[in-house]
Length: 82
Image 1 (cartoon, rainbow, N blue to C red):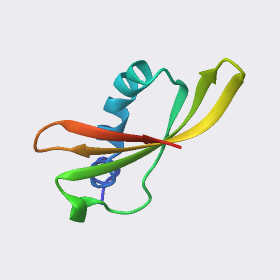
Image 2 (image 1 turned 90 degrees about the horizontal axis):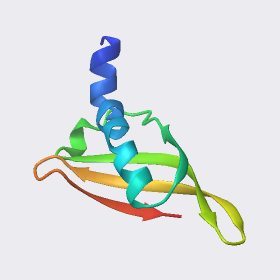
Image 3 (image 1 turned 120 degrees about the vertical axis):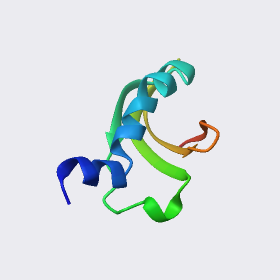
Image 4 (image 1 turned 180 degrees about the vertical axis):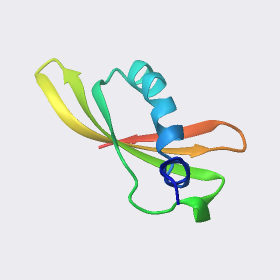
């Protein structure tokens, strides 16, 4: 499997495209993709994405993990921030 095929099968390209939108909409800083290590093609049309980020608050910056599930059929995604 080539590098491009591997990136496509683990969702890296799709997850990377979501980063700017997620960072802006959810007021996050320093969003970094946590790459999927497994083939996620069996989840189609859902692509799971995970990110490390910083959430600024009045009491300081808090490190968080952002989980997104993109539905490729309607281009909508759900976010969970922990």
